[in-house]
Image (cartoon, rainbow, N blue to C red; front, side, top):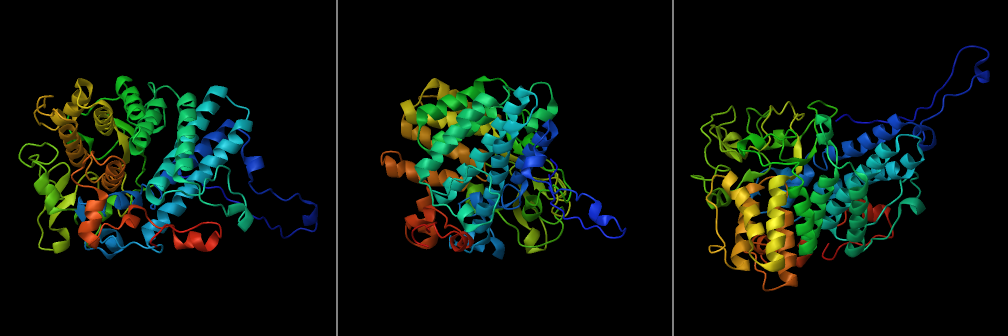
Length: 487
């Protein structure tokens, strides 16, 4: 995916005696840029491009989704605050994700404001608007999961004046309502499928909207709605589990992929994260890595039978391939031991060409299984979805006799989510929603929650750490915004 860069350039004319008679070349403005179908496509491309930012899916969303959890550890000082759960309003990832999300939101807002005025094919115009609504919903979902209520900016910011940018925080409920509205409209407007055009796999279609709806509903404990949305994806027939878990990596728009952030592998669109995860070689050089798999996680997994975790028989440049992780052997401590192996192309000096999964079918199958069980207890449909993930991993199918209670089924879904989606940036967010699930329904026990981790690391169950702080830069620049409790 290429970046769209729009320059506003002043032009100065020197030389001939009639220079003052010449008309100055205009700067690019919304009014004179959004005039053609190509302009609409370019603006949407800029919206997709925002996902590539290092502060979003290029690095920080993954790190924030894993480093506070029980999946990973690190000696790297850049992630120390996340590792030790001591983040503050000045922590880099806390500030970066907030700011980068609003860059993405602003680009989506520009599409939604100006593309409707363009004379172009009406069907494609609607699709562009639907894709932009999905992108805006995704950004707001990431924000509300991390910070709680945030300012709802629904129009493009075209002025830096305090009166134009200062907004009060909306409540979490208001943010979720806007996410729901955007996704409902996106479902109506986006293309039904990616069709025969391979390039369209990189675009948002209705089933991608449904997949995000399922995740949003699951987070809100709306079980029936989550199951319905997930089932739309599953029953569409557009996606199939990869026969091999190992073949899923690195991500490259395969048949299981629903939404990926696209990276081209150059300075204009390269993926930073792989070089921060892999040992050297193949990483560019040796330094303490992010997201080192914990010994507890590897012991928790079945490294003898589970195809996601056992040795595949392949010796790679990085070491022994275990699909989810690689076991490196080196005299240098920085490059010895287990490392994440879900992005494994040559890192290319922090410009990897690997893509990043936002949503894939196995995740949706597990969302359906969870939502269906929470709604009505163990049932054949939920078991079928759960077993599809287990058997792809080489594990035997389970029965309703084995998972006879809602709690037993819940435990198994939690286990499979951790093992299937390890290192993909969702573990901490799963632990957060497990906490809120149990807070809302004390009979719903999750063996590990975010509060379990907070207690273990900080010594007390400080509920303030269920949210990240609003960045100090935002507090300084927006007199109307209030900080989260405890910060």
